[in-house]
Each structure stands twice: as structure tokens, then as C-alpha cells.
Length: 216
Figure (cartoon, helix red, strand yellow):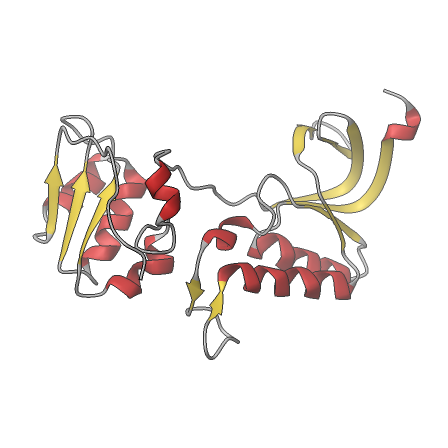
């Protein structure tokens, strides 16, 4: 790799959700001259969330994408260097740490903050995308409140699905778990909690083929 493709920085941040931008703000204020690469989903999962009502500072609530624009603007105002790009390879065995961006540019950093968060695992149905934000969500904690007192459905059988079902069971009338196979993949303790929650209804051998509805 040619020398001109190597850049040395003091603080490198990987990820641009709330954690990444918060790290950038604090690092910039500490004069660490942070460089942040936004990754595959600039702004993180909040960019696919509609109304956010549970974050301090937004008395009337805020749309997820708008909130992340505010975060980015604040990080830039503090002096953070925000860039497009995906970290595709790392080598933390020595110092400085090495991170390759888009498989071609090498960043050498004194410190690396990894704030890659999570990404939703979608079913891949066209209707799922159509109704995203209109009754379809990938985050029960984010959007569960909007369905208080209603019947809801969760697709999945792992620990994450079980956690989401248990959370929603405290808000919703009934929670239907749609499970493709005849058993759950969740840990035994999570399965026991789900099975002992009366308003969680489990539907085994159930394939989700389509989502029907209407936008209001």
C-alpha cells in the first residue's frame, strides 16, 4: 500500500448513531480532533424511526432523521471531522491501531471508539418497507408506546424477539409471536419468561408472507 493512502489521526470514531455523534462531540471538546466515519447507515437506526418522544430536549418530540441531523450538526460545530465511508478491516494488535476504510484507505489512530450499534434484521417483504413507520417497526422500545392497548405481532424466536415481546406485553393487550419453526431459539430463561406471560401468544410453524394494511 502506497504511503499517500495512509493517514494518521489521534481519535477515530466508527459509527454515526447517537453514540458515535456523542463521542465525537465530547472528543472534539477535549481537543482530540476526532475523525468520524459514518458507516453503512449514516445516522444509525434512528434514521428509519418516525416520532421520537423519549429523548430529553425535544419537548414536542422529533422525527428520528431530523434528530440525527441535529446530532451531526452539533458534532461538526464542535470541530469533529465527519466523513462518509465504511470500516472494512481493522488491526488492533499493535500501536497505532490500524483501520481500513472502504478496503483502500488506511487510517492509523492513537485511539479508536467503536460505536457501530445494531442494524435491524428485516424480512425482506416489499410491504414491510411500505408500512415502515406506519405500524411496522424494528424497535419495540422506540415505538411500542404508540400501540398501547392494542394487539401487536412480533416475528422471531430468539432472545431479541423474546425481549421485545416481554417489553410490549406491559403496554399492549396481546402480543402474538410468529415463529417459523416448531421451537424457539431464545435462551431457556427467556423462553420461560415468555411462556409465563399470559398475554403473549405463541404461534409456531407460522411463516410471515405478507403485511396488509393502509396508511393513514
